[in-house]
Image (tube, rainbow, N blue to C red; front, side, top):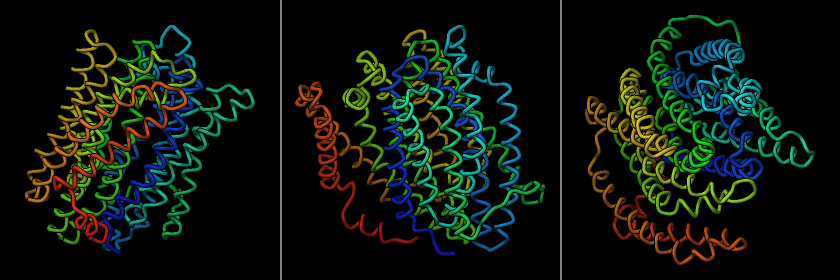
Amino acid sequence: MKPIRLFRGFLTVGAWTLASRVVGFVRDVLIAAFLGTGPVAEAYLVAFTLPNMFRRFFAEGAFNTAFVPMFSKKLEASEGPRAFAEDAFSGLATVVIVVSVIATIAMPWLVLAMAAGFVGDERFDLAVLYGRICFPYIFFISLTALLSGLLNAGGRFVAAAAAPVLMNFILIAAMLMADRFGWDMGLAMAWSTPVSGMAQLAAVWWAAKRMGFPLRLRRPRLTPDMRRLLAIAAPAVLAGGVVQINLLVGRQVGSFFEGAIAWLTYADRLYQLPLGVVGIAIGIVLLPDISRRLKAEDHAGGRAAWNRAAEFALFLTVPSAVALVVISGPLISVLFGRGAFEQSDVGPTALALAIYGVGLPAFVLQKVQQPLFFAREDTRSPFRYAVVSMVVNAGVALGLAPLIGFSAAALGTTVAGWIMSWQLWRGSRAFGDAGAADARLRARVPRIVAASLVMGVVLWFAERALTPMLAAPGERILALALLVGAGVASYAVAALAFGAISRSDLRASLRRQR
C-alpha cells in the first residue's frame, strides 16, 4: 500500500469538511430565518439530534475506533481485508436495524430523555413525529461511516469527506421547496433527513467499489476477527454512551429555558466549523496513519506524525478560539440575525458561542490525542476518562443552571472538554515518547498563543471601529468580512514575526509523504 500523505490528507479532509460546514451553515441560517427559535425549530433540532446521537454511538464512535485500526493493519499486511470489512459491514447493519425498530417504538421516551421540558406543550408531539421520520437516517449514515473509515484507511479521503455536503444540499433544497410550494416546513425537513442518508451511502459505496471493496450485505458471522472487534469496541461503546449522556444533560438543561435549545444549537454549529475542519480532519487522517506505522514498527515516524498534527491543530485552533470569544456578538448578529431569528436571540446565542470558544482547543486536542490510544487498540482508557468528564459536565451544568441559566449547559461542555484533554495527555505518557511533545512543538505553542492574543487585540479594536457598519442592514456583511480579514491578516503577520510558523516549514510539510 502507498503511504498516507499526512498533511495532504489533513488539507483534503479539511477542505471538504470546510465546504460541508459552510453549506451546513447556510442550512442553519435558513432554519433560523424560516423557523427562528420557535416550537417547530426546537422540535426538529431535538428530532435530528436523536439519529445523529446514535450514529456517533455506534458507527463514528465505538465501531470505527475499533474497525479502522484493525482494517488498516490488515490492509498493510494484505491479510484478508475485504472479508473482514464485509463481516463488519453486515454486523453493523444488523445491529442498527434492530436499534431503529426499537427506537421508533420508544420515540416518546427518547424525546422525554432528550428534552423533558417539552412535556405539556406542542414541542413534544412534534418532536416525536419528526423523530420517527428522521430515525431511519441512522441506518444509512452508520454504514456510510464504516465505509468512510475503510476509505480513509486506504488513504482515499475525498469521497468520505465530501459526502456530508450532499446531506446539507438536500436539506437546503427541501426548505426552499417547502417555502416555494407552501409545504409544512417541519415535515419537509424531517423527510429530507433519511433521503440525505441514502445519498451519502450511495456516494461512499461507489468510492469503496472503485477502491476494490464493493461490500455486500450478507448473513452476519461471528468470526475470530469479529470477536476481537467486539472486544475492542465494547469499551468504546460505553465511552460513546458517556459522551451522549453529556449531550443529554445539555439538552435537558436547555429544554427548561424557552429558546435555549435553539440558542445552544446555533452556537454549537458555529464552533463546530473550526472543530470539524481542523480536529475531525486530523483525527480521520491520523488514526490509520499511526495504526499502519505501529504495524510497520515505525515508532519515530509515529511520534513525528503526532507532533506535527498537534502543531497543525493548535496553529489553526487557538486563533479560532480567541476570535469566537472576542467577536461572538457580531458573528451571531450578522450570520443569523434575520427573519424569525430576533434581536433578542443574538445575546444568548453569542454568550453560548463564547463559552464554547474557550473549550475549542480542548475539543480539537482530543481528536489528536485519541488516535494514540485507538491505534494501540486501547479503548478502555478513553472510556475511564470519559466517565470522569461526564461527572464534571453533569455537576457543572445541573449545579449552575439555577444560578446562571441555560449557559450552564455550554459551560459544562467546555469544562468537561478540558478535563478530558488533560486526562488523555496524562494517560498517553504510558506510551513513552509516542505522545510526548518534541522540541519544535514545545517552542511553537507559546508563540502560537502570543500571535493569537495579538490578533484578539486587533479584533477588539476593529469591532469597535466597525460598529456603525455592523449595525447597518446593507453594510453588515461587508463589515463582518472586513473584521474577519483584519483578524486573519494580523494573525498571519504575528505568527511569522513570532516564529509560530515559517514559510519553509509549510512547504516542507506539504511535500512530506510520511
